[in-house]
Image (tube, rainbow over all chains, first blue to last red; front, side):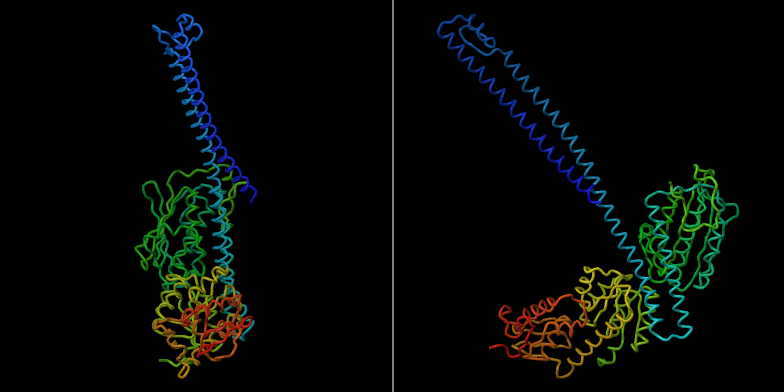
Length: 381
Length: 242
């Protein structure tokens, strides 16, 4: 865990040192070139003085020109040939241009390296932070039902209880256990979805049938909490989806609706479906606690629990996140609307109404729906 | 005004998880306490604004207003009712935050029922002691030009500055003032004021004594009322050391 980090930091340090080194090297080369050219100019200037001295002592102009090729003599005056001056100037410009190109290239290349390493480091830090906050949240979520379970057990051990009191405690404990079990499932599911290692099938699924199965499983509990569930979906309406994923999506959405309606002492949950232009929409409308419209997007984030009070004894804050991820992976979308707290809420699932088609090898030979548990989607091997 | 003994048997449970709230309430009732229960921070503050109790069992992660904020708001409006935090976040940093917010004790979930009951009993006993010791003749303490009103948690120091005392400061002062001139050990102070292993070290007591010196000594560096007895504890002198 730590070695790659040390390696990355060392590499970053090396690249930084190299950048400084390249900068210094270029600066030094440039300085050297300028110095050399200046020295040559001085040498030529001395040659001009020497030539003039020779001329002054009566040496023939032709002889002076032959001895010092860079010098021209006009009348009895010695001067530097304009060709030499041009050459020196040209050389200086050429070198400066060369250094400018080389330095830009090296600095760009090194900056790219730094950016790549820094990006990797930042990504790693983010992953670690996410893991830590995930762990903290998960352990927090577990401690509450654990505390409740422990309290019930210790109460039973410590106090003489009537049969009715014992039954209440046992029901409470069973429900705490169910909650923890549900949490484990949801956590595993959300982790698999996070990694994206899930391949969903797309096959035509009868929406009314899928909804009816999930509703049947949840209805007894809803009735106990005085919640009426109504379904109005025309027969033969098909969506292109993974049957197991659809089962998980519907169950999570209904659990969410129950959690929203329970705290207000009961109410209704209505499921309706319709075909719109290019889409098939399923709306789940509840008469529950609702939410401020500004929270609509936050609802689908991990560990968001807007109503932890009432139905919250079941909520893990992962349900709607799973719904969103599964819908995204399946090519659909999900949205939520509410007029505000206490106004109820509507969740809409939408699938493209394209021709159903089977995708890839993993789509072959499906599993029976009775297995439709939380393990929706199959991991890519 | 309600007599102390009447409402010190009453406990407010602020817990949003229905099972846990029910379990705690049932057990406290079985112990003979009068228990009220609310499920969020705002309702807790409303309840406390209208009624009084001897102890608040306060969950930290609450809807609407979190437990720390509830406790801080209570202290800000001069409500010194003891607070026992119940929370799933049991790390030391969180513990310190709870105590800084003005909490008296801190219990991490999941907890043992016996331990919860023990701590509740200990806090209520300390509170009971403080209230009865601050009744009638013990209500006001005068020393070195300072005047402390234990019931109002207020004081006026020798230079006329009005002081708001925290519950712990008042309790430490009360323990010391009960035994003027005697040596009171740090452990004794911890036991009487905190009563439990909330703080890991006796250094906490030292910090509170420093705060009391700052409030009430003319020269906190050369105390005349709150004297250190090296290696043992403290001695309180009402007259001041000559």
